[in-house]
Length: 355
Image (cartoon, rainbow, N blue to C red; front, side, top):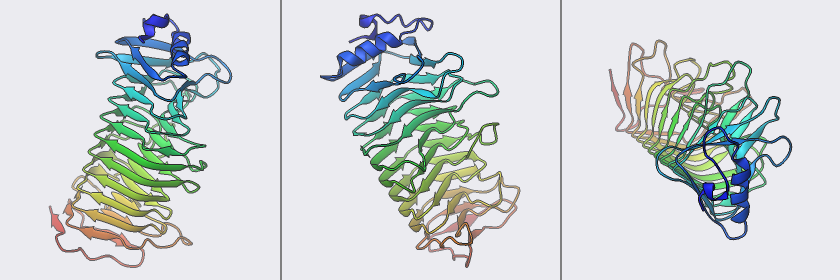
């Protein structure tokens, strides 16, 4: 059904949340597709519980033509809230834009469980907020779970705080996460934060994505990694580009294991601190392979390790089984540093260094 069939005006002024809620309610038992017309559709959040709209099992929201956009707005003094949540299976968002215009903290999409959620050609972003405005996040993975086979393809997550995150207090299983050909740009905190000390996180693939222009250092920024992993297993990070990060574009810690970085490029990264590498590996992580990556350190004004391998804290265990093969290091005025708390690993066969 088209959203206009259930009374939506889609004129960027009227509150079309009641029409959207009716459409989702009608699809709640059978599933189906809601067509979002081109243009701007406004959703104003009510107060209290139930403000976030649940996407039922089997539901697709599909944009019609170019520029199908949902605007999330709130009134003064509203509590933290969001636009959509998912707990069922086979939910898809297709070729549309979700924009947070809230002053209260918000998350555009929250996954609480389910299998085979897919975002294809979706943009998640927030518009500039005034001083003192709340944090605006893109996609949150939370409990009770499990969350399986989440796919994000040809999408854009931009101008957010955390773009995609699993917070450290969540206890759930996340598996089969695939992010492909997606852009993360101008976010104020981590682009992908999979920090799961109390969760099971495994079978993750991040491939062919662009990570750029992280804005850590803005007034409310909490972190600034491209990809942050903690207690993650069986992760593949392949054919991505990372450009302009103050912190490590890839940060691996807390017993993460079997992580492979292959054919990624790093440029103007880890420029804000000398204590991190372009790739940082900490605290008991094991089985990390770096193969065929390109590390461009020519813009660095201080000695910065391309790959920092260390315990990270006095009581933390050293990482084990870190392998470097066939990587290319482009140096500026400083020499190459590939460091470890107890030893400096020798460059393996096929490693190249140039200026």
